[in-house]
Amino acid sequence: MEQKTKIKAEDGKQDLVIKREFSLPVELLFRAYVEPEIIEQWMGTKVLKLENKRHGCWQFETTDPKGNKHCFNGVIHEFYPNQKITRTFEMENSPFPVQLEFLEFERLTDNTSKLTMQIVYKSAEFRDQMLKLPFSQGINMAHNRIQEIVNKLL
Image 1 (cartoon, rainbow, N blue to C red):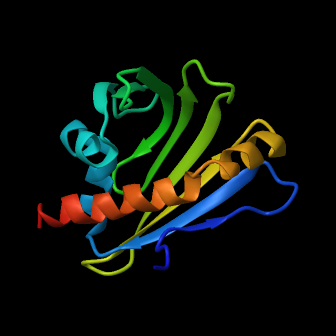
Image 2: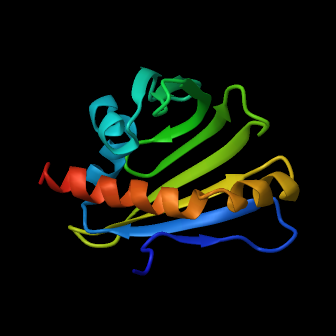
């Protein structure tokens, strides 16, 4: 089955671009990234803190099948409802350094929208290490869950 989420990673660069079109109004797609109840459903994580504003911070926690807790956090640098979120992303107790994420939400029609994410890593090497993990399958599955869960809000 073809993945609907597309990832573009140019050789030698330290970023990647992720694009996905959704059969959702842009307002609902945006809500999937800013409402704790929805985030917890599609990410399978607990939202400990989420300050949706410029200079706000966020913190999520997930538990793996062995019972180990994993924490993720960052700072929100830009927040424009239904348009853009710029934030940092850090996975605690991980060899990966902080990354910078640019999320852009675009209205295509009244009932369709597009998410474009640019993720900037500290180096091309770190980006390439991330791509060796099941990263593309994971993000595609997460986006599929967004579509499925948010469809129920229509």
